[in-house]
Length: 260
Image (cartoon, rainbow, N blue to C red):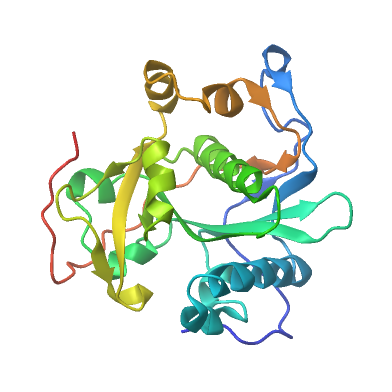
């Protein structure tokens, strides 16, 4: 299942990126804020090695047994439709955080190995965030927040309609605070076969309506997410994604009820 060939040349064929001198359009109306680190897409073996390093260290603090399987890159890291985000210190280039994003452009999401998503969701352009890991040092919360903003901007730029995550406790509470909704209301935590049967909640978030919902909720991150330009989030120019053929039904098929 896992990709252990550390000597192989990193050759991702994933999301088409085009050179761009402008990361965010209409930045003249935004406040610019510099960060002590950068967030970029991984494009080479060195960057992937850094992502794996911080990923393993983060999981080892909470799931040491599972972390033993994360000492080397996974095959999913280099699949089509996948990008890996890496946060690096400007001071010394050390890795501070990482997140993997998979779209359903080429195949169903990873979590669809364990649950059948409802039709209203699985037939739309989706992006699943996995393998979130950040440093245990001071500033880890800011790194996490900026990684989420990079995930959000990635979805905006590629035409993704729904962000989807499978969150274990207590990580899922972070997504609750961001106003994600349960895909399967009332079911709570579901053991996921593809994640060693660890219990997770499956949550979703509509990208297009995000700013309106954060505004109505007077969300404390509204300004950070929508009114501040962070040039240190370096995604380049991304091409829109399509949707892969639907996944075959998964057993058990959980209730397909749209969250209110």
